[in-house]
Image 1 (spheres, rainbow, N blue to C red):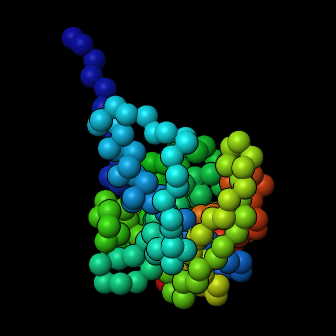
Image 2 (cartoon, one colour):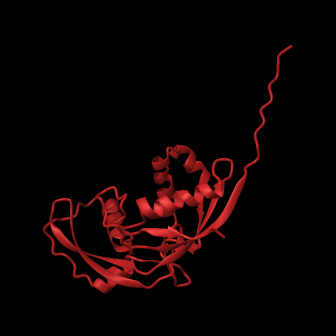
Image 3 (cartoon, rainbow, N blue to C red):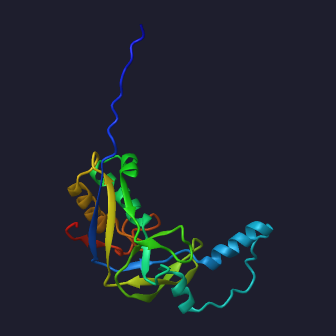
Length: 209
């Protein structure tokens, strides 16, 4: 007679809490331009390559500032909620926790959705957006002026849902604190893939609710 084995799988054990964060450095946002995305789409559909010799279209810095922001249908500013989740997963390498497990265990619940691209989940920013103009360089080294949205002071309430069989609330708090002190959010963050960052996007974590 064949032997049978039983596998005991525990039901999911998730907890949720709100973690208030307060910026300790400016939060700088620069979303991908909808106009640039549409131009890329048209080139893809027509099969025509762009000409490097054509004259550049004049751009208003106010328009570029508006394009750089994430705005909800209700009119408040936000940042992509995935930025928090990605940063927390990245911070796991600092404490020796497997990033692959963190991907399955940490989730950020959005405060709303972007008005232009409703598939983008947003965390609400409590702070006033100001136009920030900086010098930057393209890959060829050519300098240009980049226009972005900056918030300083700023704060947010991060609603996180996590697997309580993997993390305690203290673990989540400490991991988020490492994001705020070592990883950062959005443009100019210390953990930027393209540079050493500008020290932007840092924050401190208040007591969870």
